Length: 203
Image 1 (tube, one colour):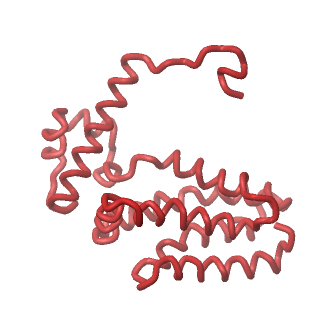
Image 2: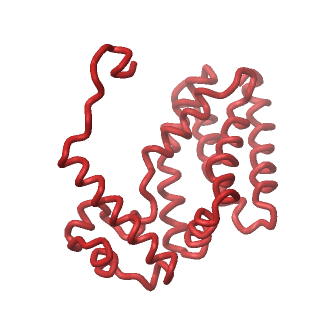
């Protein structure tokens, strides 16, 4: 229920919270700009702090490791991922919903905006970032497995749900490097779809 529906006014972000959010965004923007200009490995933390006009101590309060400067939407990504399964159209399978999510949110934006292409090139060309984003992405496995179980009428600890979640989250990495990434993603999910349909025909 929203604040409007419950009859109460939405709670506005306080001045302190607004300042913290603005500082965090300034740091992230400065880091990404420098990384895109010079490469991730050639930019130091102090340079980023100077560009954002903050101390290195402040920077680390917002971003505990250098890699985190590039990825600032982990919670939002998980929410969108789970919603893709929960809110899928009637009759659409779980693997099909996850395939559409992968194609829509991880690839379509890159096709429509050169900045996203540059961002994905930065990640793909930097081993530390590739490893970090994969580890970050796989942290959603448990949450995704729970939702798959709920939507499929299976036990919460069913290993099939965990396996589907894990391999669905691995698909972008499996598709990396292929000449036609979209086709590679689709082919990988076709395999998951076939196995899932055999196990859970109505999910």
